Image 1 (cartoon, rainbow, N blue to C red):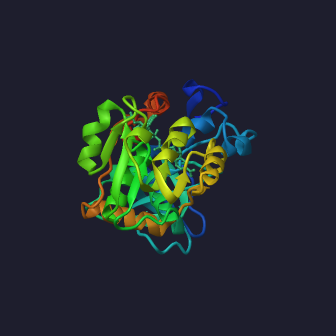
Image 2 (spheres, helix red, strand yellow):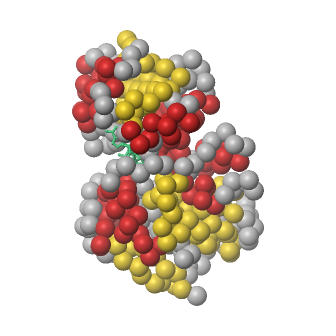
Length: 316
Ligand SMILES: NC(=O)c1ccc[n+]([C@@H]2O[C@H](COP(=O)([O-])OP(=O)(O)OC[C@H]3O[C@@H](n4cnc5c(N)ncnc54)[C@H](OP(=O)(O)O)[C@@H]3O)[C@@H](O)[C@H]2O)c1
């Protein structure tokens, strides 16, 4: 049996992604072997492939390197003393973050503690859409202390993190404002957010007295959004590249500001999978590409205009 994997052969454009064939690995003590059904694609995968960021610098001597942190699939073998799962269980995980990756594989050995059981009512597709983006959404809202009755501004509500953050904030009974292009105005309304078309006017002209800013865009859009906040507001800026700049400016204006780096937390993923299973959270999946079309999947993320998530079907 072979294990096809998508690997970064060298840093560069999407065409540097290759499909390589390796042996199916054997689970070690405490690990299970997962036959991966779907792998989620995230902006960090694309940045690492381009040679940018920490995961790229730490792995530059290890190319070809297999990216991917979001997986869903089925347990096909249990290693010694791995007792949480049985063969046949459906599982999802936020794995190998940030240095090891490995999610763009057909088979992967994962420490069982890093996995969550997928409830029957949650699809494998939804489960692969949730790990990195869903936990970023929850951790950003937690960091800002979002609670009932607050006015929360979430920049880029239509993206992978944004569409989940809106729903979690609304579930916490916050009033949510967001930014998107004309194409996503209706979609944002279906999630229950007040949407501002950023192509039409700067958000600072449309939203005021927000208690919290969750910035998923960075740069000039985030600097403009600081003018939507009330005194003492909290700012969480998620894109790492401009985090220092945004925090500095936000603090000068008297706000409580912080960047963040998402951390895998299987219990948090359990909660998100449960929310999907009972209809409290809906994942938006713009497209599922077969693994052979990973180049197109990366090109789609690079447009910067993906609605919800992009997945790879690892078995076709
Ligand atoms: N620090 C961390 O731990 C961490 C974790 C996760 C993600 N991130 C970073 O957070 C950012 C968001 O991640 P993501 O997965 O949500 O990205 P994504 O899915 O690629 O975001 C795409 C979305 O951005 C929207 N967008 C593009 N330009 C916009 C603008 N000027 N104003 C408002 N919306 C705009 C698009 O909506 P329209 O098509 O309507 O324009 C699209 O729906 C990325 O930079 C990512 O690298 C950081």
